[in-house]
Length: 400
Image (cartoon, rainbow, N blue to C red):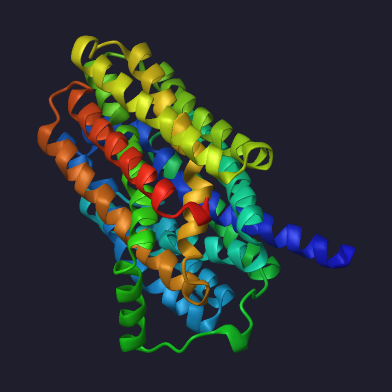
């Protein structure tokens, strides 16, 4: 493998990471301005939350198709098509002047940005073996999450300095730059002889194969249930902290950034820990820390529901635990059947989004101005995921 190839590969992987970063920050960057947007559109808390829900519906629908399309027609054209839709809809969101208009284009943003949560994983897995992929995905996750940790701070600054529209303008500019970079620097990684036919019955058969494989579904559960619970916390954070815990708008962004920095740190350290301890030990370490954080957050919700610092501390522990395992579970799941990695990534992404949407609905339904309903969701997710992790650990020792 020559230096020029390594250089081209490094550039391509960097651009792929930038694609995911751009699509990941499009939600976090405008969360601090939720209360201001609620006032601007003269609407309710539940209605303004639709800006997230509509985006996730788009993500869910598109996730079912991007993977099989990438398996059939290659990674590059599908990645570029999705990024084009995301870029155009991001520009439309920046120009929005009504909530209904904004909701439609947030849905379209989801349809486009979904590609970044399906195709990049398959590109990484095309290049690397299991341990290398876990390491690379960990580094990717760290960089992505680090950028997400600064997103609410940047978003808060843009919103306070200009208006909430500035957040969407920022995303539109970043999306345009990223699309152009992907157009010039991301090559095709799936050779034609390894592609599968775009055939409806075959795709359904592949989905059935994954859904009826206990090991694949157990890993998928771990891929979906904890990130879903985590996102419910992040999605409700601004309304909870600003409207009910009376955290100032100037300081709110730092509370969200702390959680995201912990997530970035854990994902960065995961690769080094895997090299030193091995996947088996890191997986159990992450699971143990995760469930401890979930129990602690429930305790805080019961006895100190108005204490923003204790809530943040407990959530930081929970976040650190699952951040160590995100790259491991993601890589293992999409490689359950190597010939249908794209299809697996699609199914995983769509189910993960469905779980998150269900969590968001439950959280809105039971939200009472305290952390307790969210803490209960996180507690149940942490306990159940640890049980599944133990089952995998003893049922499939050969994969540890």
